[in-house]
Image 1 (cartoon, one colour):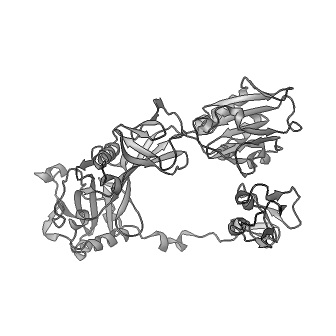
Image 2 (spheres, one colour; image 1 turned 90 degrees about the vertical axis):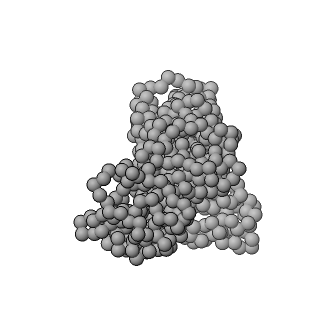
Image 3 (cartoon, one colour; image 1 turned 45 degrees about the horizontal axis):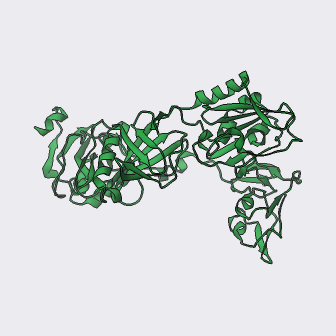
Length: 507
């Protein structure tokens, strides 16, 4: 049951705005919980401390406990939970949206390019470039595939709108979002938002390439894209040695494993192991730290919530928002027991065992509650070793990968056609296929031709840089000859594709 403490409520109205189902209202400048509350506890996250009171109570008649996620909404009859995905129909939760077949969405996810133009006739690697913009691409070739005449236009295009997203699979904390990243002492990028088990660093971009240190940024992007090892430094953070396809080295230490999931996912994935390992398990993680017996996975296996509470803010039962740092699980916890805020001795008997570990399984410690009311560290048991090993062996190895990001404009289009907008539309309509060194790309929606390409799909050495400054990328446009002619392509520059080896085209 949710109640508002009228003494603590300051009438700010934040809970009213953030309530997913709109069942909180203001009366006399105080928040009031109305009919239909599902106890999702969103109000507890946004309201002043102690303003929201949560009282344990059995499910009311007709109310169904939703177990589709950790929020565990209590859904009244004919209503939905906070996410609006499930409706309580006569005591049974059913999806509020019907399951769709592929044929029902095919018009939205397509069209796909016809197979004849899915791959280029030749690549742009070694093709050279064009300048000024109206000059035709270095090579425009045509060949018949099946019953279709196909054209590929290639150029090594200098792109000022370009950069690199380095994906570093590691649990280690690299720095706060927005922290400047330097190469040879000069700013060339920044730390971006994290992904699941990975840190993202952005290098380059038009504002850096055209800035004071543009040449350094172009060199760093080209080197990393060519899978060379480079050294970076995060301001206020560690030094990095990164090379695509290899483990990162952070402050001189080679990283071993990336996390198997957040602390909550780890509790769920390895619940049977953790249940056998100790009476309570804490999985430390900078994003979501889990407290096993309070967690849905522990409760599902019959665990009663222990008398331990953590220092971190609670997300949902057994799940806590961690804080990044250089400690256990990339949190700010240097000593495992420091994460404990309180112990209810009435629920923690002498001999009670507590396991603290990480999402990588690289560190673990077992503690036993003594008669003096203190947890003391003891030797890990075989069950603890089994649980930690299960976590560790499921983790992938730490490595660096990267996607090159480019905006293909200017000569990259004018060298293909006299009407560049027609080429842009053809690429978005999948009537023309853009590739990089023969590798497939992802085209960002919206205007222009902005693409992502996995640099590990591109031949080593295919990227370079020029002192304008810009990075240089091998681009291929492939389409039917009919479409090429319709967009005003440089037909006078077309050559037939022959049996000559591509390297002989420059002779």
